[in-house]
Length: 118
Image (cartoon, rainbow, N blue to C red):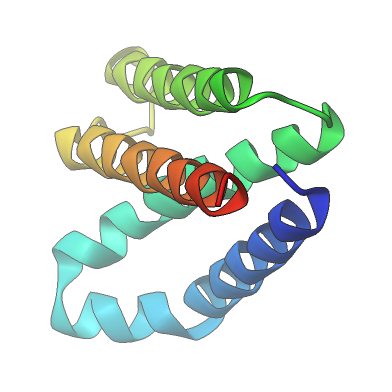
């Protein structure tokens, strides 16, 4: 995997995260609460995965996938722990959003790997 591609993907995800936090979520809360409530978990997996890949550079494909899986597991455990945290709300849709974010991250990694082998 080329570091430049990972940096570009990370920056795009970071810009999207800023956009969704500053304006998109407000719009989504007005029109579709489900997506607005879950989108931070989706973007968190992507953002954290690519950030850790850059910090631990270089990583092989399997190591990168392991990073994504670890982040999905961590966010899932955190969501489950919220059952017992005062003032926090457990939401199974956040777990699903984390899993979907992980699947997207792995998909991006597989596409990057495939394109580099051509």
